[in-house]
Image (tube, rainbow, N blue to C red; front, side, top):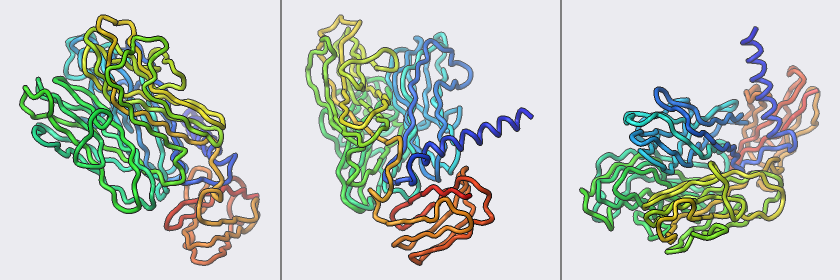
Length: 486
């Protein structure tokens, strides 16, 4: 009986989330990626023994597609402990590009993975475990964010990713490509490119890392670096692209400090998100390049800002990542924020005493109109240094609407489904060849028609009364309309 109740509740949840997607709008517009986000506040938790779930998100995908899962923030480890952290499709983690780690102290981290999903319920996790190095207490504090972005199969907006596993490679001399991705852009647009993960440098070496549209890197916000210790990193860039194949690179080079061996290991991912021209309002980006600035100020120093004009109610996902050069003795708080200040715990990350990388993400609800978001920095609590720092990175803002826009406003196909509600048959009129599917409320396909006519009639008299969806797939786009069967 208990299992039947649980099964029933899961179906109710699926129906509720699907109706949230479709109830206030009669179509699913493929120009929009959808995202979900949850803040993570885990203070002084025991993570030794088996992986611990510190955050999770369940989505109900309206159709098959790809999800991008990102877990970033800050971890405070006990001295002598290694804390493994991962964005995952299970409550466990895998080695190399399947995780990052923080050693011995406070460290910011960033981990990204992509997964193929089918229509229906899918759950993703932020996991942590004290692993291998266990000379500390096994307790850690983790403050950050877990986000899940859904990209429908065949959509105009999409994501591609490659895992990077490079062990003990020589990166001294000229930049070395440690990973690359190729996207076939269906039209002109923009690519948000992120290279994140973990770097194991030789002691005494400075390893420059960059997400790039060339096999080289640029100074300041065009790169990040790891110096003499194992560190998680994140570097993001934004590029305009033309239709056709475009290649992007994860590059590394030992430069500057070269007293080590020149060999390093890299475990992470290179992720490219494509957004077609015409939806630029939904992704905004600015590079951050601030040299020798005084951040011992109140209010916090504004390193960069972005404004978006939200056309409707929705959510934004704001990320500030890069590299901070702190003065010895100072702690520099950094945050992506909807104000020129920051909040405690998951509302910030921090860098202290040295050259370190960071990544911070927050999610906010928005109403229609103009909203501004900030990358802020402040020398806080530990002030034994000079208060002067340099920060190189990027700030990006993604918007997704709560109610999906009618497809006729943004797509290039005219579709009419009538009558709706319907009793025995529905008529579908469209101006392109298409594959037509009828799906039930759980996303299961119950009828399929390959249509090459401008008008198609589908018999639905044997279907039970209820809510259905008509999914129309052309060579360039996917459109979904809600259907009521009397």
